[in-house]
Image (cartoon, rainbow, N blue to C red; front, side, top):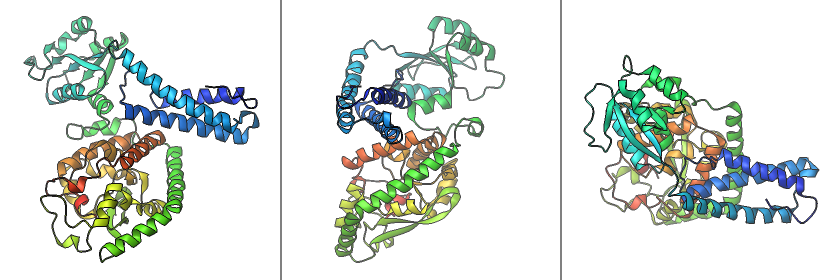
Length: 437
């Protein structure tokens, strides 16, 4: 960190340096096992630097000796941030070839084992599967690219030969088959032991609903955020929502006038959605379809003629979501959380998607982990996929994750990624997306 040339800035510079390093550690920027893309790296660095500079500003307000001069404050940020980003890119490029891939040994050869092997191949993480051990002695033919190296009884010598960094327990049935003593011995030798749901969650950022035993949810860590996290989250919701409403009020007035002049009907679209613990609330959006859109089914081909001219622009820029800030202020929603579902569709999803109602454990959000990680879709299958991301968010809910999601959302809005969903050819709708105004 640059020592400022104005005033005595040695103490605040040292504190700021420590804060940046600490926030970078919290943002998992020192985890050499992670292979972030440029966008992800930029977002995590942004969170680390912004958080550190906010903390030093607060400390300087209360402790005079930790006050950093404005010029030094700005100069250090505009030099340290891009320098850190470029150094990380250069380091990643130089060490890409020499970075050792971590070897994974799978215990089991069934559907779960095959899913983990496919996930490892598709992920950006530096893992490679060296083989699997079968539970029933039949072995595998290597059709999925992973050969059987023996049975579970062979774990001791196979682990000595292959020297895996991680052993993933991917067994559908464990009673009477799990080689506990050999696994403990491998762990004592320094090998990481992972249960397959945790490993899958680490690779994908979602929880596998289809193959998951309910007992895993019972005993898994997470799913209960600390009280301070909940209070901080609500405080951020209120402050950000009130500020955005005040700053965007002229824009919202112009949008309201444009919606009214473009087509007859109300300015706002209101729909009953399901909130936390099943509480029903009325969600607000700027109307982007004709007022009689609910009387005609969505067309099989796009673009949807029910979308108005102003509505196309609002959807493309996501400005139709602005009125949901009032839902956040009232406490019905949060800035970040699972998207609230239309009440009329919940019975179908509850019947077809396991654990669907578990997404109601937290307040719904304007944006969420599923929205920034999952492609737009309007099918039950897509709802299943989004639920896996929603459960991951509920399990790992934190202020840092919220900040990461918000920055991802800003990036999506600025570059209008995924904003052309109304133009894409879709399957017959089964979600609220095609019924939304």
